[in-house]
Length: 222
Image 1: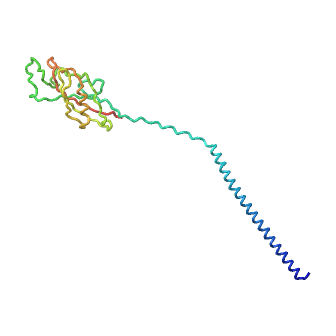
Image 2: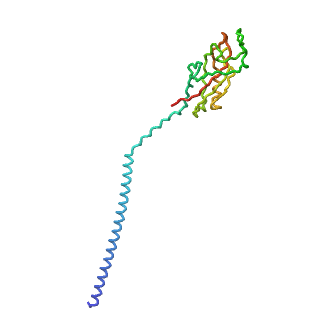
Image 3: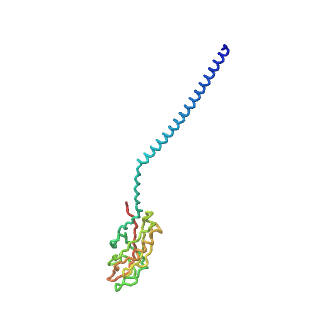
């Protein structure tokens, strides 16, 4: 064998060896990549399984929260009305109405002459100071406290003038003064109309008498 042929054979062997080395390296790289891919997939799958496991455990350990107790409804506060305090020469009975009696001055021309002591004119109207026996209240109807005044905490008074006839009935009551105006007048007049008194006495006989009462409206103090 010539020297040239020997060199050619050696070169061919080295070339084949290099090619085999490249093939082996390529196979190694491919196998390594597949291994890494499988490992990565298994790792992701493992993490997902762990998450699902934890979720199941949490779901099993979860307890139902107790229901919040229902809040008790507070009753709507209602306005409190107090009986009106009493200051009077007449009986207030058990109703507690404030009645302040005052005398009405009557002009001499308005009064009939009573110089003759024989009898008392049936149509004469006298003052309280002229009487032998002043009337006493027997029926006392309490005025209604107006709802508007209760809600707005309004207090006041009404001065009512009326004639008390020979039978002790209230005749022609009129609101001559009110504070504040247009709040308590109707309530005061409606109550006064229902009041009853013993007859006023002068000279042994029942007579008519002019009276003025002050009806006070006062709310309870807390």
